[in-house]
Length: 221
Ligand code: ADP
Ligand code: MG
Image (cartoon, rainbow, N blue to C red):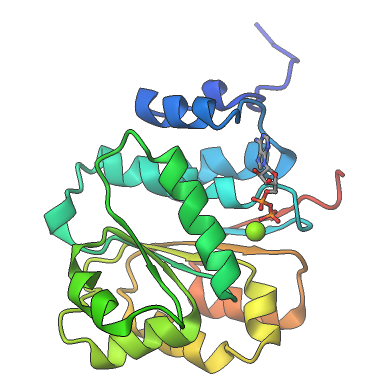
C-alpha cells in the first residue's frame, strides 16, 4: 500500500537511538528535531559521510548524536582510547560542544576530553590517552599529535569538522590538512559549516568519501 506521508523523522524519539541517549536528550529538553537534524542524523547513524550547511543556530551540534550512538553500539570502552575527534575553530566553541555532548551523553559510559589553548598542557598530556571523544581547536590538536607521545589516533574512526568554513577563514587549513593526514583513512567524517564556500568544498573533496551526503538546509528554511 502506498503511503504518501513523509517518513522523515520529526522527534528525537522517531530515530533509532538508545534509551540512554533519549534520556539525556529529554533531560536537556531536546524533543523536536530541527531541520538539519531531521536531514542528517539518520544518515550519520548509517555511517554515511555528511557535508551539512545550515545557518548558525540551526542545531548542528546535536547532529553529533550519532557519534555517541556509534561508540555505544560498538561497545567502545574507556580504555579503548580515542575513537572520535571533533575539530572546532575556537576555544569557546569547543567548550560549548564539550558541554552539550557531556550533557547528552550523561548516561553513557564514555570519556570526553577538551583540548584547547590556555588550558594546562601538562594535565592534558597526562589524560589524553583516556579519552574516547576529544574536542579541540586545530592548533592544539596538532600540537598533541606532534608532541604527546601517548596520543594515539590509530583507532580514530569518526571525525567531525565543526564550523569548517570558520576554521578555514581563520587560517587553519594547513593544520586541518595535517590532522586529517594523521587519521586513518577508513573513517566516517561529518563536516558542518554555515556556508558552502569553495574552500569548504575543496576540504570536503579531500577529506570525505565519494558518496558523502550533501545537505543544504538553507534551501528549505
Ligand atoms: P549551530 O551549531 O547550527 O549554530 P547549535 O547546535 O549551537 O547551532 O544550536 C543552537 C541552539 O539551539 C542551542 O541553544 C541549542 O541548545 C538549541 N537546539 C539545538 N537543537 C535543538 C532541538 N532539537 N530542540 C531545541 N533546541 C535545540
Ligand atoms: Mg555549531
